Image (cartoon, rainbow, N blue to C red):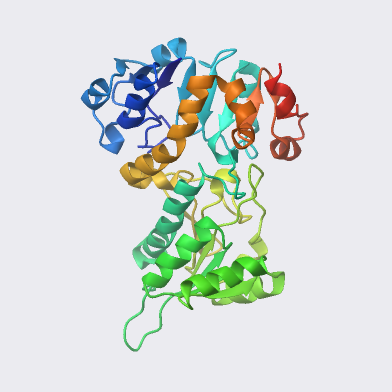
Length: 372
């Protein structure tokens, strides 16, 4: 199989879909790898690193898309990239289709087969290709939230850990999954007063046992959420429904009850965001204000630490990428039901039910799509 890796073109996206080590593994398995010149520069990988791994360097994305059987990326294909996709081509990347009807319709129209990192599952019920970036985004969230809280950025001017005689920031984390756990650990490590809200009692017991009171836990009822919102200096939205649009957990009306200059960090923005007032921003212009509350809603947070993120993501995606290349996507998905869960689009049909529900589109069962 010819595997292609173009340069990411989403604003301030410095990650790359294929590390030189992954290219080396693919070449060792008998595949050809083509990489766009400069694709790895933002993550610290040179064209010579890829050449040494056995890859061929091509100048343009058009050449990559025109020649590759499988396109491996990080972020969802942008409009100009979607025009280069063709029937029968395999796309392996993050898609986040539920809040993105334009991308969904373009992928369907292209005739390509698209497997989304964020809906591939594992035997434990986890999301192994989303987890590394959830870990990165979770650990980044208190860091960028602390920056947002600085007075010069429009925030309350509150230091996360306080100082002797002055209390720490109050941080509320909504969601106790991968993102929320890592966010809570870092925020607590910065000295903040942290409460994690979740609706799973077993998960809260786990967090309490595992972290020994490093942070508090609470049941995510509407009443308790509203109570903590009034006290919070920072709120981190960390709720995910796999493949589906994120639930709106904080309404615009509730912003008026919050402290002026409080910070909202929406880690779920890729799936539409979990605050009613969220809208996607970029690293170049990351924050905005609504009703006196500062919002940080960067849609590719892990891109800020591109080298760490690329290596973490590449370690997770490499086995799946090799399975797709070695077996072809049909056999790979037949052999691995967890990889089949990643199938979102095939040959002009949507194949992921949560996206169909979010966008009001008909869905072809992925198990039937494999047999087409």
